[in-house]
Image (tube, rainbow, N blue to C red; front, side, top):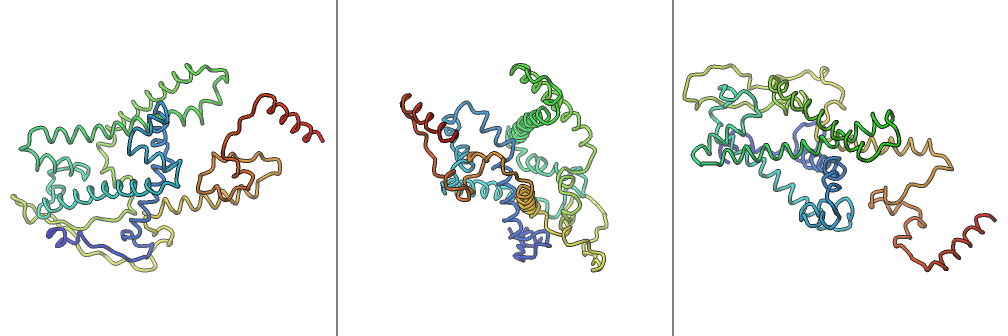
Length: 333
């Protein structure tokens, strides 16, 4: 912690200004919204739940049960606590790993010294450097990384195949296709998508790091590092003092909002625009939306007659026919 404090890696900005890139409140609010969007309605996560053979099997998966209940039984407050604790532990491990790597290489940055070519290689390099004398540990780490990556990739490939089939191919195919034919088409799409994704690795290898490519230049720059403790001579000029930008050269404020708020802003814009368009384009003969298609948090906004019926009622055949006959006469009159 002393090295991290000396290098200003423990500085926490509590400013509420949304135009600042890195603040405590932006990270808490933005990351929470992002993970709620990914886990709550993300196609990859939902597919993992739906791929289980039964609801009972889904509930046997402990933490997955809690995640599943978040989307089905939001009244259970314990699920929210468990999810928050799980995400807090995962993010804490990420932060601690970064602090340990900085403490290890605070005076000899492996990127500047060209011991690694990209920032994506720092973590594997750190594990191999620290655990080189522990047999099997580096291999276990690399195997875990590949296992997690391939697991996520398999789910995403299945999602891509479903989207391609439903949105592009289904309209051009015969409507009387059997389930076996549809399954074979989806498998072919997965195979082709997997080959393309694997082939693109050759292209990505020659690009810059993955995280800067994903975040863009608006992510900002990292703090300067040192090479004073390197065991061999090295000379490189760095600009450690930030260059002031004239006020008139700053872009429009919407482009300066912290990237942490992108998910929240997108959700709000989608909801507001969707409500306005739905209200303006609605018709009197539009069929009512089924209650199960609306999040349980919004059930209190439904009409009373839609929200009261929550249980199935079974009658004898004679009574059911009598009720059907009465309802038919009322409709005819």
